[in-house]
Structure formats: structure tokens, C-alpha cells
Amino acid sequence: MNDPASSALVADLRAFDDYLRVERNAAVATRTAYRRDLERFAATLAAAGCGAWAEVHADHVRRHLASRHRAGSGPRTIARGLAAIRALFAWLLREGRVGANPAAELRPPRHTRPLPKTLQIEAIEQLMALPDTGPLARRDRALLELFYSAGVRLAELAGLDVEAVDLAEGSARVMGKGRKTRIVPIGGPARSALRAWLRDRADWARPGEPALFVSRRGGRLSRRAIQQRLARRAQQLGLPQHLHPHMLRHSFATHLLESSGDLRAVQELLGHADIATTQVYTHLDFSHLADVYERAHPRARRRRREG
Image 1 (cartoon, rainbow, N blue to C red):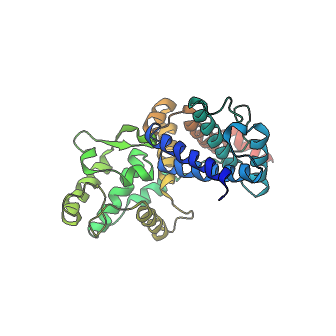
Image 2: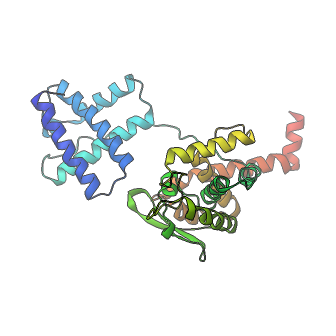
Image 3: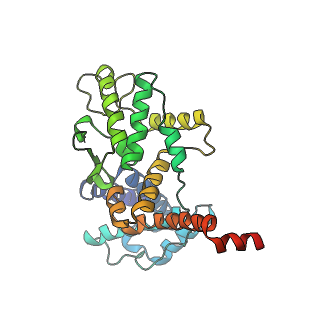
């Protein structure tokens, strides 16, 4: 993208990224994905001889999304690309740079959202039963307990500082998506595990290090390191499925919804801005109820025997 037309488009994309960062407090991952999608769109426009955003119309957007589909992008990726283009033109409209949003009336491709994978409660109990073999085991136990107890995201857990955790009250203040903070409760087993780890942390952490979870080198434990510790624990137990951090968050939400049926409360605890995001767990809850019905209802058993 070295021609003058594409250079002008890319300069605007940098300004849009600054807007997302400063005014919208958009997450780094969101900004990175949007930047990548929009740079591809700008390259498509430049190749078509379109050198200004005001020249873009709906057919440009359609052709670009169709080319992404032909290149093998899935519905979710294409929908994210469309969302990025819509957001860009909403900003350009606000800045008085364009007269209309060419993506406003376009609809993303339909896709079936896969149900999140969860662990059975028995597997959770196995996972938490780490033998106390020293500081590393106590740290990993605290990690696992807090993941499942609070239902936090990987980035939220890795970003936790000591001062954000109140063990007396049984709560933690986490920084979620869009730099929004929320208070999450911490259960008894997680509090006990954290108390044990905090005694070891005092010997491990570098002076002035605020992180709750630190490595043996004394710095904040990275997200990648947390993923590896969880995967190793699952491997040790011989769990049949790959264990990733979000699986504990999904399990937290599913088990809580099965017990309480309170979708709004689960939404608040997970930090979802839109309850539609949380509603995926109602499908999991129904699956659980259907499974109980099949096992327990006499007519269900008879139908299975007759079949």
C-alpha cells in the first residue's frame, strides 16, 4: 500500500485507532483486530482506484466481504470485519468526513454460535485437588480456585493486583473489557488458597511488584504461562479434553445458572454488557435439564428401551 490514495486511507485509520484508544477505551485486542480488518479493506479500495472514504458505497463493502469469504474467512471473521467498517464510518460521519455510512444497511452472514465447552463438577473437584508440594503448587491452586470461584477472564486474572483483592470481604475488583471495573465474589476455598499463596508470594515478588500472581522470577505471571499451567494440570489428571482458561469461566457460569436460574446475576458476575451474550448459557442449562430428564423420567426411559 504505497500509492498516495492508500496512504491517505491508512492515515485516517491511524486517527480512528487513536479515537478507539482514547475516547472509547477499546481493548487492545479489539483495536488490533479492527486495524487488521480495516487495512485489508483500505487495500481493496486502493486496488479499485478508490482513494477517499467519501467515495465508498455499499457495493465496495459487499465486494470486499465477498472476497474475504472466497479467501476462506468464516462468518465470525466476516461479521467482525463488517463491524469494523461500520464503526469507522460512524466516526467519519461524526467528523463530517462522509455523508453516509455505506455499511449501515448490510447484514453480517449468519453463523451458528458453538456452545461453550464446560467441565463436569467432578472434573472441577479433581482439578482443584492439587497436592501441597510447595509454593508453585500453592500458587497454581490459588489460580485455579480463583478462576472457577469468580468466573473471571484470563486477562482479568493475569491483571489482578494484590490491592484489588479483599479476602476479609471475599471479593476482588477486576478490570474487564473496555476498562470497566466490576466487583466479583470469592468463595471460601478460593480465599483459603489465596491466603496460602500470599504467604509464599512475599518471598517471590520483586520489591514494588503489584501483581497478585507472580512467576519464580518475581514479575507478573503472563497469560501464556497461566494457560500452560492449566494445560499441564489437565494433562497430569488425564482429562480427556484440552483445558483452556475460558473453560473454567464457562463452567462457573453454567453451574451457577443451573443452581440459581438467575440469568441477570450471571450476566453481572461475568461482566457481559449485553444479556444476549450470557443467554448462550441458557442453552447449556437446557442441555443439562434434558440430560437429567432422559436419565430420570420413566416415560423417557421406556421410549429409549422401545426404540
